[in-house]
Amino acid sequence: MIEKIFSVPKLEYMQCERRSNLLLVTLDRAAKRNALDRQFIEELFELFSAVEGSDVRAVVVTANGDHFCAGLDLVEHHREDRSATDFMHICRRWHAAFERIQHCGVPVIGALKGAVVGGGLELASSFHIRVADPTTYFALPEGQRGIFTGGGATVRVARMVGEARMMDMMLTGRVYTGEEAVSVGLCQYLVPTDQCLAKAIGIAEKAAENPPLSNFAITSGIGHIGNMPSTDAFFAEAFIAGITNTQPASKERLEAFANKSAPKTLLVPQE
Ligand code: 1HE
Image 1: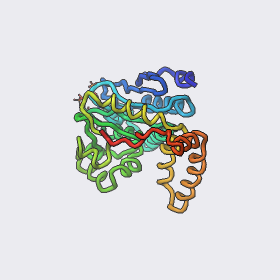
Image 2: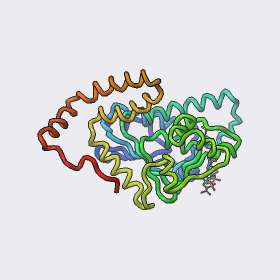
Image 3: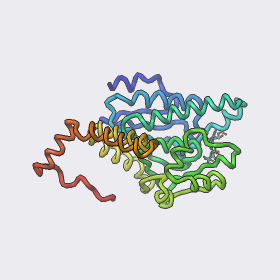
């Protein structure tokens, strides 16, 4: 399956590196602050389509340059003088690409820095865990640019921070950084600048130790179940648990627990 990852057509805007069962993806359009143009979105779609069903067990996404992602390529958007229909179809591609990321079946961990703004936050919100450093700042400058989110923020960011907070971000350009960003749910970890990537890799390595089916259930199931009315959600949860909690890997681990041979350190306090 490793070939599947590398059969992705050559990517211009991302570098990919296999590190054992992890895939390290580096956004590589630093000269444009990793702004997302049409091609970038197509490359994200291709790459994460290839991850699903491969032997990659977790993905870490980081970026070259000082900024994780400055969002929609505003210059391309302006230059193309797009019609409403054009942009609607562009948004559909963004949605498709970020759905591929969210539902690629394995944990995707972001190592963030600098600007994570507009569409950059939409991209980061499709990851399962976000690690920030003191340079990282989150914002939705759409209101000030006279535009609106189009890459899924109304769903993912609203879920992360709540509707009122998202509206405040969009109406006023409010920026979140540091511990405040952690406390409102924009990121889960805040680490010193030089430790962000290492922390994200550490999280990915840890998560990759879980049985793949459990990680698939966690990374896709929770999001899907969140879209359902509670009666359907309970049904789906029972169904997923029925399959996941009786898989061979689960039986082995539970047998180890029953035999008292399982490691005691499964539940680790946050460093
Ligand atoms: C860009 C973009 C971009 C930089 N599209 N080219 N996003 C924003 O509103 C954020 C726009 N960007 C910025 O505010 C700043 O670039 C940063 C604060 C992120 C970084 O500042 P700085 O001083 O390091 O860089 P810079 O000088 O502003 O930009 C360097 C180059 O990157 C420059 O190109 P150059 O050819 O003149 O060198 C910029 O034009 C280019 N660049 N950001 C295109 N975003 C699906 S809807 C989603 C809606 C949104 O995403 S709204 C948020 C848009």
